[in-house]
Structures are given as C-alpha cells and as structure tokens.
Image (tube, rainbow over all chains, first blue to last red; front, side):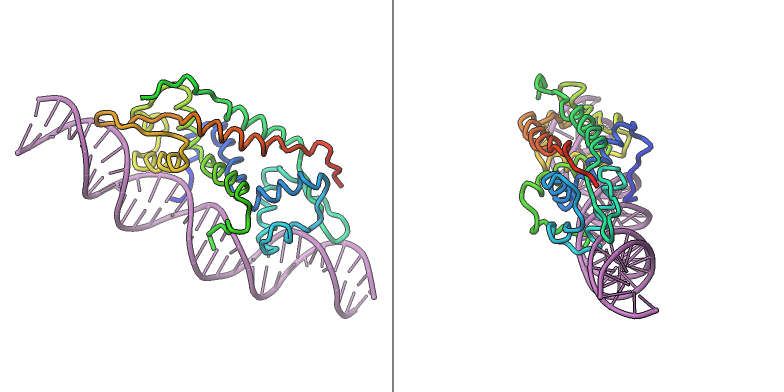
Length: 109
Length: 109
DNA sequence: ATTATTAATCGTAATATTGCAATATAATAA
DNA sequence: TTATTATATTGCAATATTACGATTAATAAT
C-alpha cells in the first residue's frame, strides 16, 4: 500500500486530486508565484528565489511540467520556464467548479 | 528528507500548499462531493459510498477534520459529518486568490 | 449482562515524497 | 579542444502516505 486506489474513483475526482497534489507543496507554489510575478520567462534564478538545492528545484519543475502547468524552452545554455496559460485556465475552471460546490443550506446536526 | 522545509516559505505559501495537499487525494474529494451533494449530515454511509475500508475512510476524515474542513457531531452510536461552511469559504478565497494570478500577458520565450 | 453497531485507533506493509550529493549531459565560450 | 555554465538524472537516506486487519471504546438493543 502507500498506493492510491484510483480505479474506484471517477476521472473527475482523480483529476482534481492530481492537480491539487501537485499544488500541495510550498516550493511549487513559490515557483508558480514567481513565474506569475515576473510575468515573463525565468531562466534559472528559481534556485536562488526558492532556496532549495538545484536538483530539488529541478524535480519540482519536472512535476509541474508533467501536468503541463509550465513549459520549458531552451535558451542558449539555460532553460526558460513559463506558465502554460491554457492549462492554467483549465485548472482554474476545474478547481473553481469544485470549490463552488455550495453547502450553505446544509442542515447540520 | 521526506520532510518539507516549511521554514523557508511564506505562511501563505505553506497554507495554500497544506490545503491543496489535503485535497490531493480522490477519496477526500469524493467525501467532500458527497457531503455537498446530500446537503445534510452524513451518518456513516461514507464507507459504502467511497468504497474503501472503514479505517481508511476514518483516516481520511481525520485529515479533513485536522484542517477544519469538516465537522463531526456524535449522534447516538454514529457520527455525523458535514462541511464547515466558514472554513470552506476561507479556502475558496485562499485558492481563488492564487488561481486568479494572471499571466495572460506573459512574454514567453 | 450480553450482544450488536458504529467509528476511532493501533500496528504494520507497501509505496511515495522530499531533499541533496554526486554525476551526467548539453550548449556555448575561451 | 578544453573549460565553463546551466540543467537534468541517478542514487540514496529520511520521512510521509495509503490502505487495511485487528482491536478498542462507546452506546443501543435484547
């Protein structure tokens, strides 16, 4: 065990969970915030900005890339990262649909 | 290792990540969806609805309770669960603020 | 009192995640 | 060619997560 039983859930449930899981680490939040903040590509200053070792950052970037949340373009010796706007919009819709579930009329016992 | 270096991140980054992490499992998504759907308290049918063993569900409920996302009220022999609306609103605001970061004018290389 | 019901907790196995040192790779610069 | 620079990959240690059987605790029903 230690392995999630994805088969028993709907694909929507699995998708929401997968996205949330990737957002479930402060380093990845910091990376995304920085990418939004500078509003252009980042070419490798993420290690300094975030404050973790280079291999660790590289690993977090990989997870963000796996879900297509960010893109990396090779630029001379370095790689430039930026948000994939299309994917980000999808994620926004996906999570908003979930967050907007309304239980305000819940009759709590 | 295996342990997140929370000290180096802002409390906002840690909070977003903590919430996202809890939402990062399909069973917990399923539990929340069910609580919203039936729009009242659930008294223990979650094990059947979700399809995992009782101790496993109990554990997932615990994590949701740890973040105050759900409440459990004892009702005779069973326990009734429902969404904590106040907390849910907070989470909505927190995540929306993050999701609404706009990079549409990003100059990607 | 005994038994059934319900949910939490304990213990444990399997797997995943986090983080980094060391190394590899790839592209330019000297 | 030989550095130099920037990023990725590998390997590993420490810890966390997922899942469930067994047990416990608390009340309800008989």
